[in-house]
Image (cartoon, rainbow, N blue to C red; front, side, top):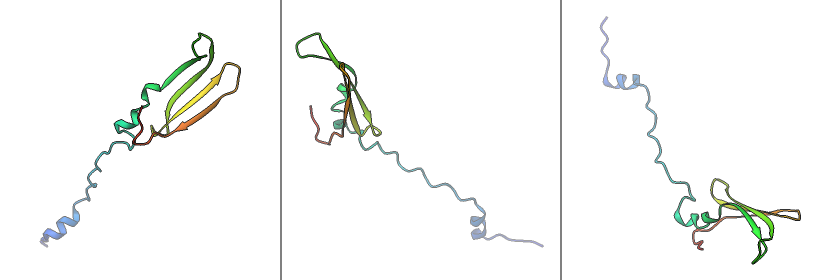
Length: 93
């Protein structure tokens, strides 16, 4: 018996192709203005104003996938604290 495939039947036999990949977008906080405080990121010794007396240390780091900056301070005499800030699009130094 001879079978003739119609073009429509052939299309049905073709495996479905994956959808094209979505365009790669930059992270929402990758814009230049969000880097305004990058100079501050790191480990810092804190000294009393105008002296060599070390009074504490600060750690400044990016958090929340780069969307915010956290400052953690640790005084020499004990205790600690932190603050997390999310610079806005108009942040400037």
